[in-house]
Image 1 (tube, rainbow, N blue to C red):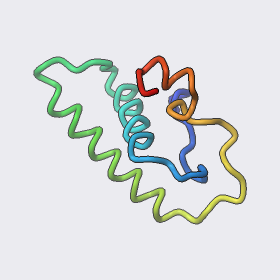
Image 2 (tube, helix red, strand yellow):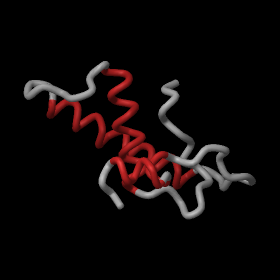
Image 3 (spheres, rainbow, N blue to C red):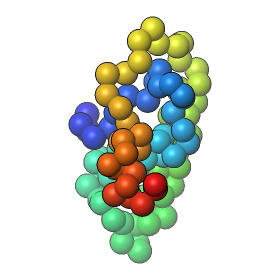
Length: 88
């Protein structure tokens, strides 16, 4: 498993669409070996990200609630990461 993907189930507040899409993008980067797809691969790459994002959203919606929150904070909830990405 990619060590950069954090658990999204059980977050308070719940995982955002942005966090789910970021995790999906990281997963697709890992399994494809492509960080930035070339023009020939952009459509397939982005389609895969959209598919994994939708599947992850359905999965999180269908799972029973956790008793404890995840041990790690997702990157997009860390101030230093948000600042680096220009998200404020």
